[in-house]
Length: 434
View 1 (cartoon, helix red, strand yellow):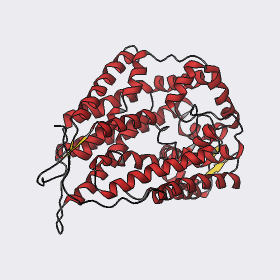
View 2 (cartoon, one colour):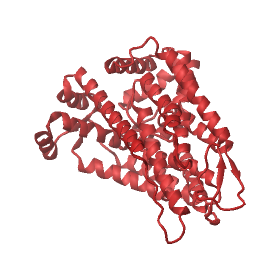
View 3 (cartoon, helix red, strand yellow):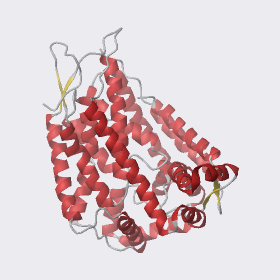
View 4 (cartoon, helix red, strand yellow):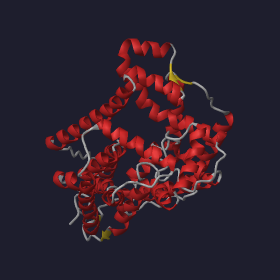
């Protein structure tokens, strides 16, 4: 795990570079110096926050054993509840029709703008609160188990996420699961390197079955993402129609000599995929800039940036949510990714800069605790901290893909785990669910 301040700066430098290199062109808006200054203040607050945490004196690097038996039971139970609840929610829906899923998401967005009551079932509401436990199960198993059980990973880590992906009609849960698993694998490798005796190299390769399973999941996810994009494009006449929508409705063009070269060499469809994947990365930079420069609406106190808060307030006062989101609609930023800092600005105005500093301090705390190597339980946080920083161009850690609930389950895993004292060294520090 790299220092969080350095990682955050690299992410935003890469985002700005990507916007500068690819032929994105704003149609009816422009980025402002004021917006970049406010972005710098948020970034500076985060970095200063990370530096306020004093380094932890490094402990002896040796074997530790963590008892995850209670954690295993809690997370597995949440996975079972998720599957049952979402099965009830999906029993009357066409789960394989991507066009129908797109229409459903559009209807939900329209209902938000109109202040209509939520039509979600009780099963969906329960599943919404329990499916993020699957992310934590994946991290715990990948980072801490000597030989993760593929059967249990599939049952309690993968299946609940697939059910949530189908129920929501989007891609965020599946994308989050794949990425958090990759970051967990990185954490596992670092952990193993630490434990290898001096002067030796310890290699632990996944077996062919595990590699095949990972390959199939990644290939299937990529196919699903691309299929969703093309399904949406078909509604407006394919890739050329989607570029027209981007210009007329989104206000973003893809033009210039480089764009012409890409259309000629790659074709409309492949260029569209390149455009849409990179648009997800750079739109937070642009939308955040627009919000910093022009948003003068109410302080939304989490309604904008946190899914769970938005859902709760909608049930109490749907008209309030509609009014708040109408201010964003008038600005042309509703429905787009605002970045972590744009989200904080809308929800808390300039008080969001203080929250950015607190976020930095918390990531700094995790970083220093892990570097201190005194308590292996802190490794549970590492993939989620990394995810929050790398996807800050989308939203805050608690706002990205039901992040508030995800981080609540992360704390459950940390607090329910127990350190066990060892009288003699064991071959590998990593614990198991006993």
